[in-house]
Length: 153
Image (cartoon, rainbow, N blue to C red):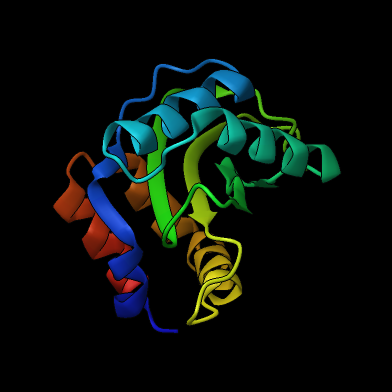
């Protein structure tokens, strides 16, 4: 998977550059509600429960102020990724115990025909491991700036 292909899984309606959430659970609700609002997901409660259960297995806060909550649900038709940014930071139980500022929520159907779920996760981690990308994402104010950072990765 290349960076250009990855950009196909984002949508401007799922770009939230100024999150209000102050806790992990508020964050999940804020992002899932946006998925529902733009009609990507039907059953918000099933998705929230799936995300909470996934989180119980181990934090999706991967460190360096980044979290990638993710999971599969029958409520999703296709793989989609929401991006949220928190200026104040959210206590997340991340592996390095630091608050998260950059959040990528990946929601996928139980099976995706192209089997892109794991490659997408891997590509996201690769992009986010680079400090220059994290710094640029923290500065990005518009969807076009955001997509340019992801596509250059």
